[in-house]
Image (cartoon, rainbow, N blue to C red; front, top):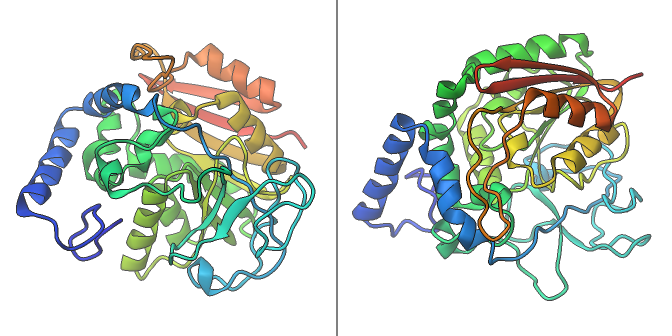
Length: 345
């Protein structure tokens, strides 16, 4: 979906000058008007509410992943069926224990492992070219980022506009997260959950903070953007790319030492389930660093039961984190919440 020469979220090189100009104008507006990301979510809600339910990640692996995963040739983190946590070979597409099915290694040359559960009446869950304008089916807070246009805009003003709400800024957020993760061994395994276009995971990989780095997102177009940007920077080593649902992570219990999730919790369809999964896949003593929006940003009105984004209070985030089992520290900076969570040993 990404044109590597023009850096445009389109399928081919046949784009018109008008289309390119429109995309670049949209990127400029996003950078100048912070409210635009939320307006886009609100406008797209009625479109997304008529589309399909979320696919769920399901995969399991025991083995060596080679060229199919960006050239990585060492054993990946232990994968497991998110429905029953039963291990299966990497080349399997069905869990022998619970019957769940998934795509696994994509045959279309995709740079990521696709572990999203497949519907029996549908063989292709990928966005089509018109999904740049009409979103894929499912909860808009998750599905909006599957649009190639949104993936294109994300590092061209969208994410940086969050600074107006109190977010520290990308470099400052990275320093805060890295400082928190100093407690973790350099031989640790790390996951950037809801990695988006790879703003943070590229920094962690470039600085070789962890022995193993895994980037996870539900959006195919975001993962393509991560791959493109990683390949364009020779300083960044290879790392795994995984497509998965945050509420059904395809990893075994106690796989990771550290997990990061930047500006993402307000987009998770089921926050409590996502936090429970983070807790499950962290090792005892493992750390979770996350940022999200906090009230008084008003929630957009629900349209046909589909809430574009969910904004929290500090007490709500504390309660959700403690309910998942974490030792919890929630810091508030204006309208940004910074979560520093630890799984008890």
